[in-house]
Every structure is written in structure tokens, then in C-alpha cells.
Image (cartoon, rainbow, N blue to C red; front, top):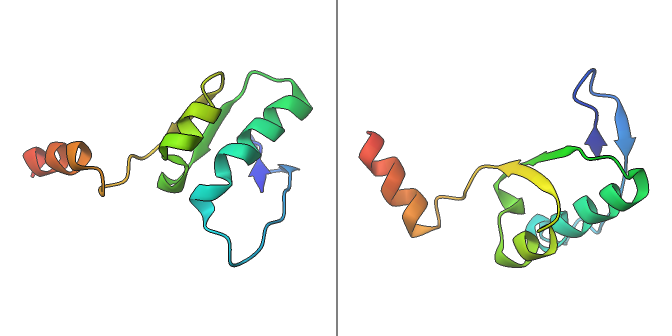
Length: 82
């Protein structure tokens, strides 16, 4: 579900199998959302969005998410902050 940032009003819904891994379809959902609304919005998601295939698919979109700590560079950077 995609909600507006000014009141959390649901504006887009895409159902998927409960057995499907989030990272395998979040990028496609973001692309479908942008095509339907034709609005230059910022997609904010959790770390499941951050995969190589999603980033390639969303190259024309504005997005923000946390980089998963399973990526060595992210884990190394976080360790320097502690």
C-alpha cells in the first residue's frame, strides 16, 4: 500500500502473494504507481527496496530507503559511527 505523506491516506494498492519476498516486487510496484499517477513524487520504502534489480528498474524515479546492513560498505560505515 502506498499512502500520502500528508495524512496517510491510501492512494495505491497492489496485492501480492504472502509467500513472495518483498524485495522481488517493491520496485515494480513503485514503477506502476508512478505510471498511473504521473506525479513526480518521492518513494520512501524500507530496506527491501534496495536491490540491484529494483535500483535499475527505478532509475527514473525519486526514491529514499535505508541501505541494508548485509551490504559490506553500509556495515563498515555504520561500524565507524559507534
